[in-house]
Length: 63
Image 1: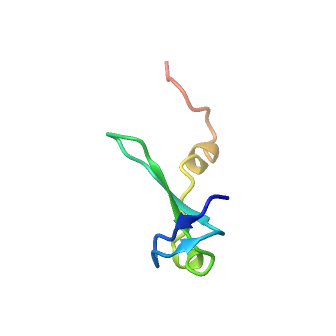
Image 2: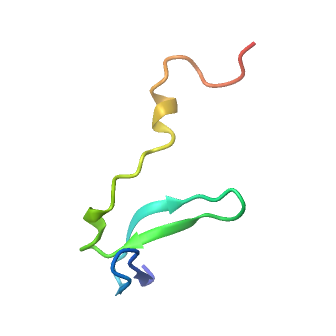
């Protein structure tokens, strides 16, 4: 993998860990990387699709 900058300690790491995916309404999002030592300090990211999969009724247009 390409070396990346850790979002916490700002050091270059050759073993980057994805800790978040940034989203933006006005532009492209970005991937947030951390080094293996700092990665556990980031909060667990919520899966945006998990709430859709947990629903009993199908997702879609209601008639």
